[in-house]
Length: 354
Image (cartoon, rainbow, N blue to C red; front, top):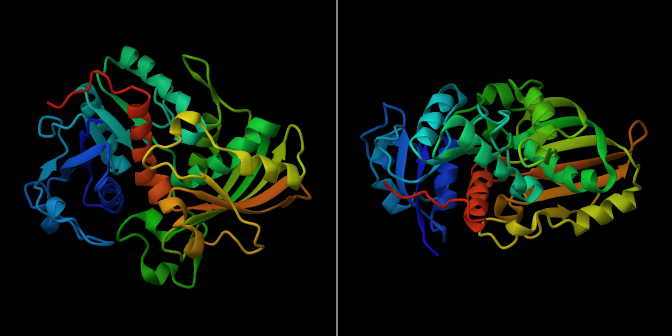
């Protein structure tokens, strides 16, 4: 298989570094370019970035950081770890220049012609790219991954929604500090503490879920008929977002029936066997005290969602706890898996290195 040359925008930040770790040695993608802000452009990567985890690969360390400008970046596939404050215009410029942008930012997630994709859940939503290119005149395109917390929610609920029809969800998140980027939350604010507010997080969970679990009719996404109430909390955990959910269904399952569906779920068939796809995507734990971020976040190389404590709920129908690695599954790894699905389904035809 052809190895596609790829670039990472926002490469010096925490998510940008996660992209680099995930792409290093990838069998389908060859990371050849890194880009960041003007203050970093022109420097060797090892001087521009404060490397946070593991060993910085030598060939990446020697790359010169470029500007986030399509005239300076030649790769046909671009992974964007840009902050939402700058991502909108930059990502659109790359798409207009014929590049396929895999975005981790919120800017385009809820646009009607932009795919918001978790491959195992709604890989068919990539079909929106045809409409996007037609309506916007972009020879390239933008594909977004979901918010890191709603990724956990959607993967846990997707099989249950298909089987029983999710109608109401009450969500409380306990989100790791790595979700705030680097340097993130000051230690004196988070150590021994819980912060019951994360800007924009609750609306993202409530709105993105209905798009993710909606159906693609060939032109648009028909939102899932789900009402969600979300509470988002930052906790003193390094990696791994934990989500406690109470769920109401159209057809009420017993805990045993729900567990049977969760254990049997394999997701969208085209995703199976992709380099970053975990097998299984959902790991069901019977232990009464699991999932736990320290023990379960590494599952499936950080790409699996671990689910436990599935039981009856006295107000709605069921309650459960789900957890996944927010920087891997909820950010960089999720975007890389989106790109792999595009390759596997032949949707990169026409892209070429410039």
